[in-house]
Each structure stands twice: as structure tokens, then as C-alpha cells.
Amino acid sequence: MESPTAQIIAFTWYREADYNLLLEASRNKVGLFEDYQSWLADAQAAFDKYTDLGFEPHRVYIDVQDYLDWCELRQRAINKPSREIYKEIRRQQYYRELDARAACPPIDGKPN
Image 1: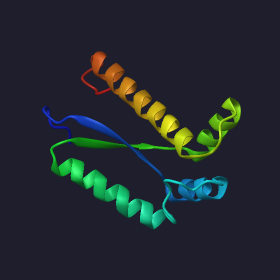
Image 2: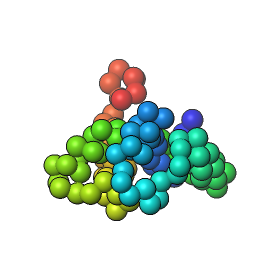
Image 3: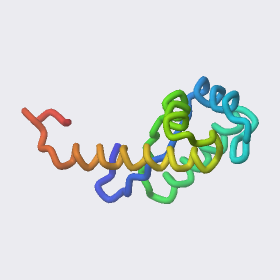
């Protein structure tokens, strides 16, 4: 539940099948964990740390096929720099969507 004073922070998150696809597609595995369970343990620890610090973390799921298509369209390598750019784009999209929902008053008392 959202606290009125908590600062929302967007965490990019992978589903297991997506993470496995990312591992398969990546020649350069710099910045990737060996397997999904290792990644998940690390990501969950960071998520919990920010929760404990008073932030309100939200998961922003990464569609790896969309990332791969994005790389192909822009002729970018599938590597850590392109992943970081793509993840930041997704986080910013998420924040814009939150702002848009906050700017629109509820209709008939129903949340947006």
C-alpha cells in the first residue's frame, strides 16, 4: 500500500523465462548473473533494502524480446550498456505513466 510520504522507486524486474532468454541472447554476459535464481536473490535483497529505507519500490517488468527487438532496430549490441539504456527508458516510461494517472481525477470515485 502506498504511503503518502514514501518515494516511489522503479525497479526493473525479470521473469524467469525472460532472464533465460537474455542469457541465451547475450554473447557478452558482463553484469549478468549466472542464472535466474542468483539474479532474483540479489534483486530481492536490493528491493527489500529500499523498502527498509522507507522507499516504495515498484517492479517494472522487462520484456526481453522487446529489448532484443529494440537493439536490432537501433543496431545496438546486446550487452550491459544497451541493457542499462533500455532499462532506464522503461523506468522513465513507468514514472510518466504514474504522473499521468496522478494528474487524472478518478471517474465515479474509481481509481485510474
